[in-house]
Length: 180
Length: 180
Image (cartoon, rainbow over all chains, first blue to last red; front, side, top):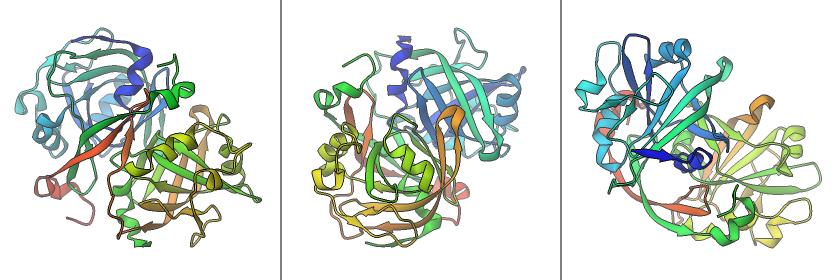
C-alpha cells in the first residue's frame, strides 16, 4: 500500500461503497461492515451511522479512532460474513482470513486485503441520530491491485457492483477542488 | 409513478446514488444535485450534507421540506448541468426539460423523469457539520421505467454506473428488517 493524497480521499468514499471499519478497544481489534456513510467535507470529513447495536461502537466511543477499509467485489462474502457475526464472540481477522496492518497514526489496524484504507479520528458523535463524524488523517491505496470494483449494498441483501465509468470532468471542472 | 412501500424506501438510497433534491421557497421550486447522502434509519431517515453554498439551502431551511428524486444513467447530463448552475438565476425545471409533479404531502415537486421520488420533512439541521436530517413521508417509483441503473459520483468529475447485482439475501436474512 502506498499513501493516497488526503485531499483526494473523499473520492474513495463519495460513490457510496460498502466499507469495513476497524476499531481497537485497547486489547483487540474488531471489524464491522458499514453501508451507511457519507462524505461531509473535502478536508476530508466522513459521517457514518452506527450505535450501540454494533459491538465495535463501544471501542469507537472510547478510543475515538477507526480505519475505513474499502473492499472490492472479490471480498463480498467476507463483507457479508463480517456484517452478520459479532466481535463479542468472534475474532473477525482470524475468521475471515484478513491481515491487520499497523497504521501510521491510529491504533485500529488497516486491512491489507482492501483496495484502500483511511485512518480516521472521531471528531463528533451525534447521539440523537447515531451519526459518527470522523476526520481522515492518512489514506493508503493498493495501487497494484487488479480488482478495483467496489460494492454498493442495496439493503435488501443484494449488492450492486461498480459498472462502467463515465467522464464528465470538463463539465464538472468548476466544482472539483484543486481542479481536474 | 406508483407508491413505494415507505419501510423499504431506504433501499432506494442505500447504494449511494447521486440524487436530485427539490425545494420550494414559497414562490418557486428549485433543484440541486447532491452526492453526499446516507441512510440514518430504516424508518426511513436520511442525511445529506449541504449548506449556504447551495441556493436551495435557504428554501430548505425555511420550508423544511424536500423531495429526493433519483435519476438514472440516461439523465447524467441533466444531473451534471443542475449541479453546475444556480437556482439564483436559472429555472432548472425549464432549462433541463424536467417535469414538476405535485407531491402527496410536501410542497416541493417530484420530478416525473426520475426513477423514484421520496417526499421528506427536514427534522434536524446540524449546523456544525452542515448535515441535514430528513424523515421520508411518502415514496414513489416509476416501476414501468426501463432504465433503472443509477449513477454514483466519484467526486473527480467521473461517475460510476450501476453494474451487475449479486444476491446474498440468504446470508443477510437476519439483518434485513421485515425479512427478505
